[in-house]
Image (tube, rainbow over all chains, first blue to last red; front, top):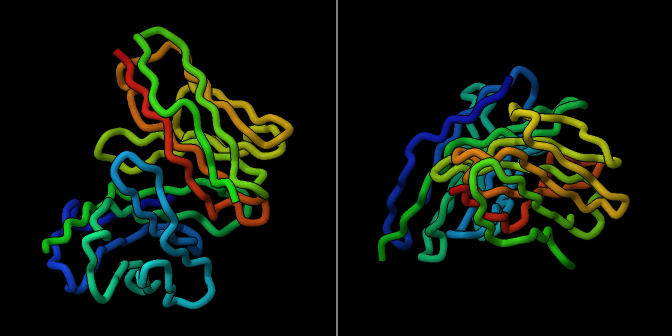
Amino acid sequence: AQSVTQLGSHVSVSEGALVLLRCNYSSSVPPYLFWYVQYPNQGLQLLLKYTSAATLVKGINDFEAEFKKSETSFHLTKPSAHMSDAAEYFCAVSESGAGSYQLTFGKGTKLSVIP
Amino acid sequence: DAGVTQSPTHLIKTRGQQVTLRCSPKSGHDTVSWYQQALGQGPQFIFQYYEEEERQRGNFPDRFSGHQFPNYSSELNVNALLLGDSALYLCASSFRDAPNEQFFGPGTRLTVL
């Protein structure tokens, strides 16, 4: 079984400050990991993914995440927050083996950016 | 390049009724997954369809059923609606060689009264 824990249901940062959204996962097999962003009344947009290649993954809009197996973490960072980054962010895990196709999501972290 | 499309955008039903939601996958994708997102929660996996068959199912009752057509589009059917079925229903598409890399549509907001 797999699960995701996102620490902090709500994070506030000032415009221009570092963004750090935390994600810890549990998986019995090597995982695939994803970060999605959801703007109000919209679907989910894929920000970045880890699929067993480089442990530091770069995504769209200057977001990046680092896979740390020893810490079972996949935290999302961005050096400088923009007002347009205000949204809800979801971390998701999937098993890498054949026969497992579902994504298991965390409960989400709502990011607010203060001008 | 058309992304994932879903219809309708919003839907209001009463308890006990049945509903059908529709999804067209992103161009080039042949696999469709459905998720339920309750208010304030992350999406939960309902099932995935590939080659017109249900390939994997999450922890949802049999009231939830689906179908995939030869053109890869898909329907989600929910029978005997309950108040607790009110949610945003998200469709995601992917390619058979990367079934976990899923691209989501805008969703259908279902309200059950």
